[in-house]
Image (cartoon, rainbow over all chains, first blue to last red; front, side, top):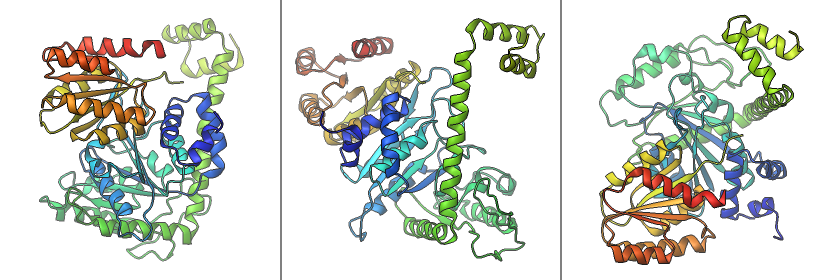
Length: 337
Length: 134
């Protein structure tokens, strides 16, 4: 063992990369140490999130996008990593990860690396370790990282915190204007994709989304941005730095519309860089990650400091209704009666 | 910290289109708490080895009903070894004559199952095969 794991990753060894991803996914101490070493090499990749309801064609679309980034005609083909998250069973912890089925066109290309992840009990559409796995790919020199979420419902919006560019994939027949004006998943879209655009109902779907965008007061989508919120009545944002999500129609099974989608992604990346949002998103993401880790670590440390018997006793008093949950927290933290 | 999950690649190499068995086994492994990466039909040995590497699996399950197992499996074993994944356990399901099953096991396949094999037995044998390593 002359080379460290980090050095192997930086020099492009695929088996080392695959094994580190497993360590990171399992939260192992070795994985964490390697990640510390790799962290200075991160921050270069364009992170693109793909989310939307189950069955809208996210995996097929990711397949088409990766093909576009890799196609021989592209001036400088980009190295593409794909992280595809599917749900874990809440009962057994098992999972069937089926996203690779739609990505067979990418087999045999050394410039593409696909990794499937189970959500392992996380609820936001990603797994807890997804952000760390993405950092590994980033350090390993992948130019583009496509992150496919669990088939998401209405509030699985974690992806918008992680990615630079978030695609929300819809397909015809999924809902009316009421669905379109609800808060949640549609709000996080930087680009709205209507996939399966050969199906009937595509006009209605697009009209509903356009209506939603027309009503929208474009707001800055940096999470917890410190400046004032800008709101602009009407269609045209008065401030040119505000991004209005384009709507792109695609048919992912045959590649129709992928060109327009790629152009929209490129425009969004340019917009982020020119407006300074790229840096602001990075900052918000790192801050959120720090906060999450801090919370988890503090809780773990605290739990280790409370004797098991004491904890059980407090739970028992909760069950007996002699203590409310808030009182229980106070008792545990302050060591009261 | 999460415990180490058993990760299994379930693949159908070759040209037959019957994936019911592979799906039943995938579901059974899921219900046993394993993470199953399902790759679907008509995979080449190269595709399977590549997926096994990228996914860093502990087990590869192959379903073959075409009769081509003696051509496909040695090739897959070879490729896994070339990638440094000789520790990965291989399980095969399908229509495999007894004498072929014997030869496959000599080549390094851990388990071979025919029609009617109880899924619980497959689960137990996968766990047993991985037990010493963990």
